[in-house]
Amino acid sequence: MDTINKPLIMNRTAYVYDPYFLKHTQEGHPEFSGRLVAIMEKLEDSGILKTLIKIPAKKCTIDQLLLVHPQSHIDNVKYVSESKIPYLDTDTYTNEFSYNAALLAAGSLIELTNAVVQQKVKNGFAIIRPPGHHAVKKQSMGFCIFSNVAIAAKVAQNQFNIKKIAIIDFDVHHGNGTQDIVNEDPDILFISTHQYPLYPGTGRIEETGKGEGKGSTMNIAVPAGTGDEGFGKIYDQIIIPSLHKFQPELILVSAGYDAHWSDPLAGLTLSLEGFAEISKKLINVAEELCKGKIVFSLEGGYNLDALSNGVMNSIKLLSRRDDIYDPIGKSNNVEPDITELIKEIIKIHG
Image (cartoon, rainbow, N blue to C red):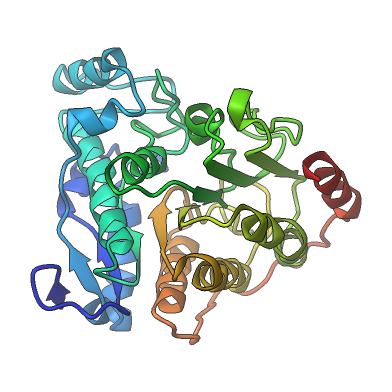
């Protein structure tokens, strides 16, 4: 396995992971350490892990966090974690390792993103936790402590002169935290596909950003049952054209695999093949628009087979392999017709 300190080949795919992420865990909670264990075992057993470049994990700095979160929020997370208070909110647990794990998650994504931006590697996947897309500016929520992808985007803007960034969130839940942080920035295009209504209750199609960022947030709120067919239309008719219109210099992906039909926490019906098609479309458009600069960051996914195979397939596609593996198959449910929804979103966003 190559590391970032060895001679690098610019067209290689990288990943970042650290066993410290496993210390943040709670028995019986769906967002537990076994998620990453399953992913890493799958990558090792498949043989793909040894073909990747490993980026060393690193904690983010407080200054980097302050680009997104106020000091009061950072201090609260530190206090709750170190005091062994079990919860930040009703869904988001902590233990004595959680604060440092959250710093490491955000910092590791920053390190991977910087390696891609500097073209030390082609692209990458951050296998990190706790996840981040529900963490709003002043509060942790929904299993998420710090807003990993938003932090990485702001660091890329501030430290590496990347102006225009697109964030695509295909987790089954709305990326309300990411939206809260970037929705006034006209240079960040945020697109979230999510089941609606569902936790956290935000992400209506009418939510399009605020102030100077009006129009730079796109919420594609789909009904339960939407799967491979519907997502294919959404990407072909809305997301890919929107990316071409925006012309990003970098694409960040909040990659949640809980929109799979077997996931216990939601009701969309994507298959592993459907997730692979989404990944392929995003990777291809990154090649067209921003020299392939795309970074995936793990969010949700709570069926371990769907999660581990979904991540493996995305990494295969990042590595320009097409041997997609789907041992679970497709849902037998009939998808709802989302034709009118697509028309409405196109009308809203021109």
